[in-house]
Length: 251
Image 1: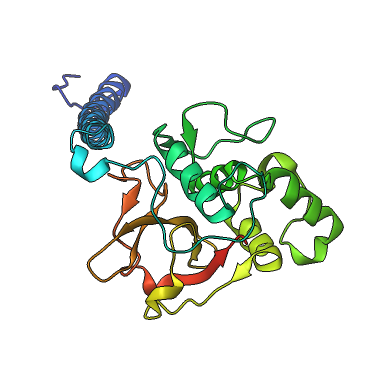
Image 2: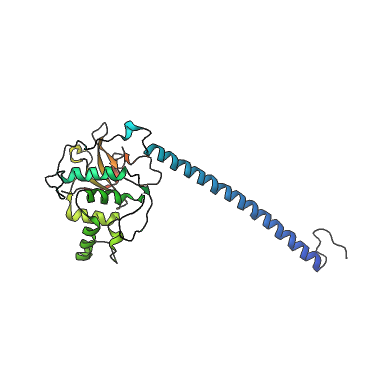
């Protein structure tokens, strides 16, 4: 029997027909793979370009925006100096946060044996933890002890000192229990002072108030909330006012 290119008159024709269909499927999948690879490469290029832009801005190509005094001038000062270094807790914490953010920690959530990040990465809770450490408060030790002594107060099933102090929900509980709770009403301008700690959403984010104020007298926010965040110091407290759930002062 004769058969054409796509003949189906005999077993050979059927076999040939299947092969052509398979080839067509492979061609379609090959085209799809090429398009998908192109999209992934484009996305990667955009991401890298954004990261480069962020890095350029953070590294001080705009010095007027990033310039900091060695000792910030702030109105409120705590009556306590936990580490006895001559700087009160409020100022100590603020200076510690500035010093930490000057290291330009890249936003990435990583688990560390030993608890404290030992590389260039970090998250929002590290801003608070490093600031408090500079003021003489070791949150890793303090939160772990509080969780073990009062487990009913924390949303923790199995305590892990290496990570518990780096979770917003645990920092929020500790601050509610041991720090000074302040108003969440942003209209009470005088209540918002540099060095205060602020929690947002359902314990979704946390940051520290800067000594830099906007035109309305509201402090900028010092935080690390995204790998694409352009500046660690942002004028966005008013934008986030409806999501503020906690406002604290360590002493």
